Length: 229
Image (cartoon, rainbow, N blue to C red; front, side, top):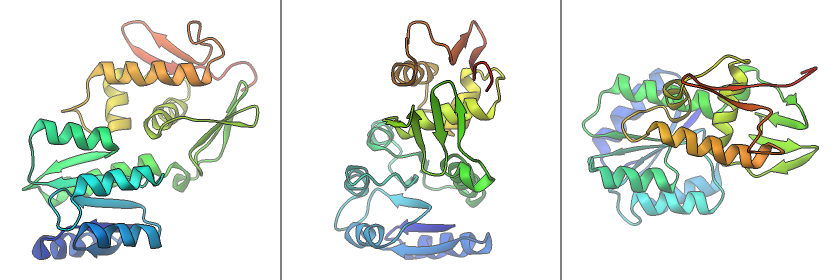
C-alpha cells in the first residue's frame, strides 16, 4: 500500500511518514500542490493525505484537479481549517474523509485503514458477483447491466458493495453511514436515502418498484439478489 502525503509542514510530514512506515505502508511526501499533482500524474497511489493550506496550489484545487482527471484515489483531508463550510466544500469536491489538526496518530491510522478497506474490496479476495441482470466487479469498481457499464459514483458503488457484503441482512442507515462514509459529523440519514434513490434509478428496471435494493420499514435497507443468485 502506497500513500502520498501532500503537506508543507516538514515536522508533521516526517512524523506521519515515520508512523505510517512502521505500520508497513510505503510513503511519499510532496511539499506543495504542483509537486503533489505531478506525483499523482506519474504514479498510482492507494491513498492521498492532503493538507488544504499548501503553497503553489491549495488543497481544494488539488482535489478538484484530481477528480476532474478521473482520479478516484481515496483522499483524507488533514487541515487546521475546521469550519463546517470548509468540510462541506471538500466533501462535495470528492474528499473521502476529513481530520482537523491537531489530531491523534491512532485516529488517523484507523481512518486510513477504513478508507483502504472501502476503496479496495478486491484486496480482501473479493471477486465479481452477479445478481439479476447485474454484475458488480470490485477489482475495477464497476457495475454492468447485461455487459454494459452503468455509471455509478464512488459512493454509490460503496453503498452497493456494503449491501452485497451484508449478504441479504438489513443494514440500518447508521451502519451504512459508518461503512460507506466512515464519519458521522457531516453525514445525515437523508444522505443515505439520497444516494439509495440515485442508485435505484441507475440499476433497477423500475426504481418505483425495486427488485434488489429494498427498504425495510423502520430498519434500513437490504439487497435481494433474486432467484438463483
